[in-house]
Image (spheres, rainbow, N blue to C red):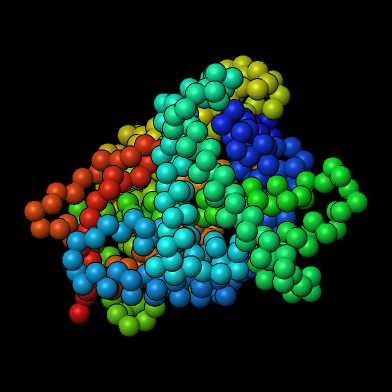
Length: 399
């Protein structure tokens, strides 16, 4: 049945930006080839291996040092977290990380943040309904297209830099691997391995590898500041299992059921992709007694799943106990932030490692509190993802 719902509907906005290229919005044989290649490349560049975990640990150190410079004073954690998380996927895709003071890269992260907000705007939704009219009119949709072109230009420049010093015998990162694959198909004009697909696939990795994990971490720190008693329990577990001087690693995750439960509860409550990424019915199908003609768009209501009162004891309350049983971590079937099936998130394993290492590293080193005379809230901003509204936190160093 999964193959009947394995396609992506291509909306006019996505058609304009990606033209059915890349990993997220491609379909059919193109998607199969790109997905297979990308999975292999991710594994070759450390997915599930100690080398990549060490990269995450190193970046977690850079992040804690950057936050330490705030000296416990109120600050907005948004772009520091974005930069840290993005550096992991950038090291895989582009072969390098970017300093937190790099003005050009900060601009790119801001463009990424803007496109996430703009794509959910009313004007962009109108473009999906009336593209032939909206393409002639000014508005946020034109800003969206302009931002994506700037992001594409950044990737194009990275590809050109790689081409200039490319050595087929030494594959440094995803772009090198893709250039090598392209060189095998130069005589095939119908091959899916071409520069436009490289640009779009690299952008997909950059976008998906930055936005979802960084937004989840921002929710996590916000919940810690709002629930100090839960933060104290996490810190007690960290102190007992890892200590204050040792760097967190995924090797201790099974020994830290409470911390693991807190991260999962952040994902459940944050619910950052509430309607999942849309799918499309590939052949006439019947599901749960409903006839679904070929071409029907399917939206999965993950909010209904993650807030189902028959599945969760306190569905609307932040409660790590949802993922605990007799003091041990308990997996839950009614929990699927990474989706399911062949269209599930390619980077789930990487995201889980990042969430655990970044979160434990931050709460090990700091206690997160609301600034004096500022009230934190769980209000959110709608975009491609649901993210916290702009806020400030105090990161008080733990002695």
